[in-house]
Length: 79
Image (cartoon, rainbow, N blue to C red; front, top):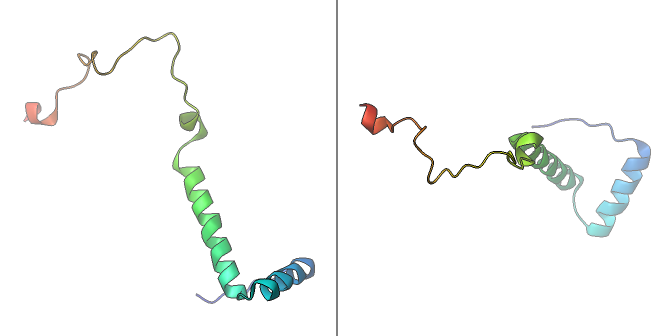
């Protein structure tokens, strides 16, 4: 996909310095930056912070391994 991006002068100068020092292409740096950005966004959007920070309910004592009576029967039992 071809695209055109306006890079402000101050950032362009920094980028050109980086590119010369590391002997790499502008395209490669931009593609890597986009990939990193998208990966971070996808990871951040994967789970809501409330789920990631879940600490349980302190007043509820429950052991899923032993307290399964409330669960619905498996699909095989229904058919």
